[in-house]
Amino acid sequence: MSMGETMQGITLEELQLAARNHGMPLEALRYDITPVGMHYLLIHFDVPFVDPDTWTLSIGGRVRTPLTLSLDDVRARERVRLPVTLECAGNGRARLSPRPISQPWLNEAVGTAEWTGTPLAPVLEEAGLEQDALEVVFTGRDRGIQGDIEQNYERSLRLEDARRPEVLLAYEINGQPLPPQHGFPLRLVVPGWYGMTHVKWLDRITAIARPFEGFQQADAYRVRQTREEPGEPVTRIRPRSLLIPPGIPEFLSRRRIVSPGPCVIEGRAWSGWGLVERVEVSVDGGRTWADATLDPPVSPYAWRGWRFEWDASVAGEYELCSRATDAAGSVQPLDQRWNAEGVTNNMAQRVDVTVAPSRPS
Ligand SMILES: Nc1nc2c(c(=O)[nH]1)N[C@H]1C(S)=C(S)[C@@H](COP(=O)(O)O)O[C@H]1N2
Ligand SMILES: [Mo]
Image 1 (cartoon, protein in one colour):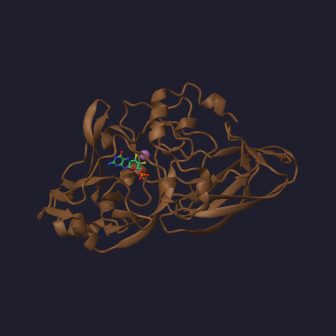
Image 2 (tube, helix red, strand yellow):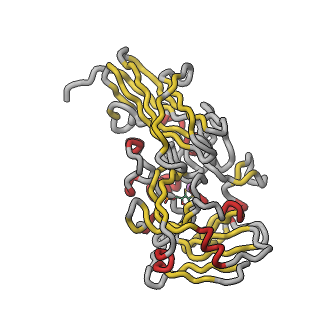
Image 3 (cartoon, protein in one colour):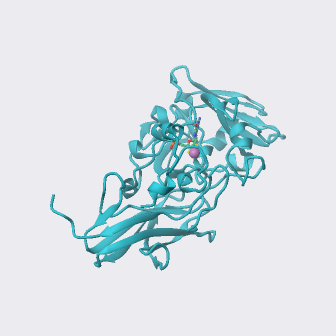
């Protein structure tokens, strides 16, 4: 595996981030709904400690009737349960060359959870947005320093995005109260958008009459070649497919060993720009491709399963890849699309496999 080369020079600071923010083990792609402990995690600062009895959510700024809601108030509102695939915008960053320094994800910053919460739009409606309201800012309780700026984690959405019916204030994941690391007691869920949008540990929602200039909006999560350019904001998830590495792994390299014979390759594919309509598989590193069979999507905002029957009867070395095409016609590239923060990269996964008779233990 080329890991030895590409991971060279990984720093202790990157390792420290990687140890706090774990990915989803790829074998968890077998589940329609990712078990909570296997869902990936990304936390910029510290997980805040929140007392649910005194916690409130305030809705203010350019509204006619500012609101303060307790957790019971939020839970008493209309209840919706929706499977949503979440992916970190930095997924795939560690394989970029040169490697942008941040959380060093390989492929595994993804998961699909069933979120329970209340739609945001009626809450905004009740607060009564003023005529000049342009964006809504979501502020988390977590605080830290990034880019030399002390800040709470906060992100905004334009009104037309915030008011979409699938946008939720979520208090449960897979039928359980949110655990601390996933945003207890309340987080935003914006189906189809990259992870940074789904603000955890919500403290307040503020309607504003100008574009939000906070660090995580204006300085971070931009697609650009240098940090100095304004670039384009990161929004919806680009199509990606992942396969469950077949056979058994070698401990250190995680290289795969498959016994000769028929081998079913399974995986998942998703996009925030519409349904994934095609998944292709290659066993020769992307030189030739064949279509996989698709399962129905788990929800309009979640991944779909796929499978491919590989005739692995000839012993030897193989390189497995898969690529998704979505309803918008975007196809996953085989080569990197580099940018300064290493965001929105959806280059195809590559899995090295040795087909060889298994050895007795
Ligand atoms: N308050 C707050 N919300 C946050 C973050 C954070 O650091 N603080 N990280 C964001 C990022 S970058 C991602 S990818 C998702 C990850 O959500 P998860 O940890 O529940 O999988 O949360 C987002 N929401
Ligand atoms: Mo993220």
